[in-house]
Every structure is written in C-alpha cells, then in structure tokens.
Amino acid sequence: MENLTDEKIKELAIKANDIRMSIIEMLLEAKSGHTAGPLGMADIFTLLYFHKLKHNPEKPELEDRDRVVLSNGHIAPVLYATMAHAGYMPKEELLTLRKFGSRLQGHPHRDFMPWLENSSGPLGSGLSQGVGMALADRINNGVGTDKTIYVLLSDGEHDEGNTWEAVLLAGKEKLRNLIAIVDRNNIQIDGYTENILPLGDLLKKYEQFGWHAQEIDGHNFEEINNAINLAKAVYDKPSVIIARTIPGRGVSMFERDYKWHGYAPNGKEAVSDYKQALHELRTLGGKIRSEHE
Image (cartoon, rainbow, N blue to C red; front, side, top):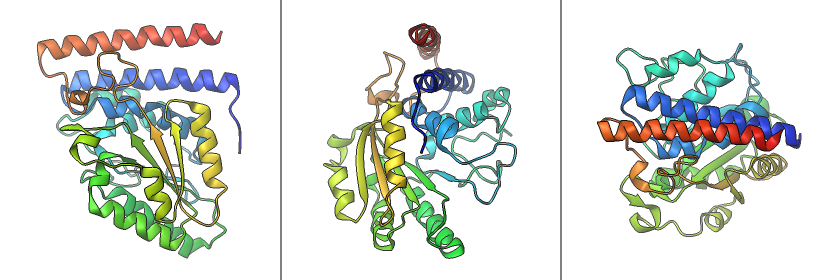
C-alpha cells in the first residue's frame, strides 16, 4: 500500500486544480449543472483515479478493475472531468456537458459511456448498487478477491431510507471488498443538512451497523490515502470513510454556501461570477506549483 511522496502530493494537487478548472469551464459552457459538490470532491476523485484505483483507461472493461459507483449523480461534472484527464475521453468533449445529443448527461448514463459502472440520478440508490456488486464479486470470486468496490455518496442522501437498507445489508454480509466514501459537506439543495434533517454522528451510526468507520479531511491527500489503506486492511466488515469537505472548494465566493449546490451560470451576473472563479483557480494553480518547487 503505497504512501505518498512530497512529489506525488504536488502532482495530485496540480491535477485536482486542473480538474476544478475543467468543472468551471464545463458549467460555463452548459449554463447548467451543479457547482459546489463537484468542486468539493475533486481531491478525492483525483486521489482515486491518479493514485489508488486499479484501472486502465485503454481497457476500461477489464474484469479485475476496481469499481467506482457514483451515487449522488448530480456531481457528474467531477466524474466526467476526472475521467477525461485520466484518458477515458477527449478533454474537448467536456464542453458538451448537458447539450442535446451529448454523452455527458446531467446525471451519468452508462448506456452512453460503458466505462461508467452505473447510471445514477435518484439519490439513495448508489450504495445498494455497490452492495450488489460487492456481493456478486464475492460469489463469483470468493473471499480472496482483491477487487474493491468504491461507492461515493453524499451526506444529504442519508435522508433516503434506501441508503440505510444498504448499510444494514452490507454490515450483515461483512462485505470487506466495499468502501463507501461519504461527502460530508453539510449542505443540500435547500439548506444545511443539520437544519433540513439532522444526521448527527454518522461515524457512530455506521459503527452500530457493523461497519469500520473513519472520519478524515477530504482535502488532505495523505489522510485520504491512509484511510483507504486502512479500509483495505479490514477483512471482516465493510468500510466507510466520512470525508469532511468544503463545498465549492477552491473558489472563495462559492465555499460553504449551500446556494451554490445547484446554482449554474445562466445569467450575466452568474457568468461573471464563474469567470472570476476560473481566474481564481488559475491563480491558485500557479501558487501550488511555486509552493512545491
């Protein structure tokens, strides 16, 4: 289980910033889509696709690949941008987001892109899909399989009962090949999670349902990497990593404000805001490079 060198952390930080710029460019072109969640999850997606996953963009359907299941499909821009930067599709295609005839729908659609592991949209479904994959993998390959099923889901979708049914089943079946990563950004489309439907201590809740649980800084590459390493070393239960993230990460006017959850640049003032955001990220990219030189 490879640790991160200073050089690798620099590489990942630069890549995550490039992915954030791609997200803003996509939303500017589409004038539609979600902003806060994709920016907030860019570090985790970068660590997965550029350091942790067993995958091959040139052979995306290899049987022994790790699986990435995106449950909160509205953050699709970060998935598309990361996969494009990883070589699954041309980066130019990102500018077709949400356009008529595009493969890049507002929520991921596997029929259009077979290298996706699932179609998503209805919140609360992804963990059940991941549990099914983990069970199927164990049935087909036995307990010794080294394939990992990663499910990325939001804190807000824990309002959905289907999520907790999946949590219960995974704990009962002791699915050691399942790692859930929860985006604990404390917002949802109509407010802050603890005002809408308080979630309380998610770590303790998961532990009570038979999971190995950790809570980390979702923007710290070392913490993300170490948490995944520890999760993969647990052999008698599924693992959850509760990642505290800042919605809108990298753009000061977007950060921690729930209104940017689903806000998109579809007016003159909004377009100006997003152009300013792109400038801020470009400037940040230069700072990241200079700080690590």
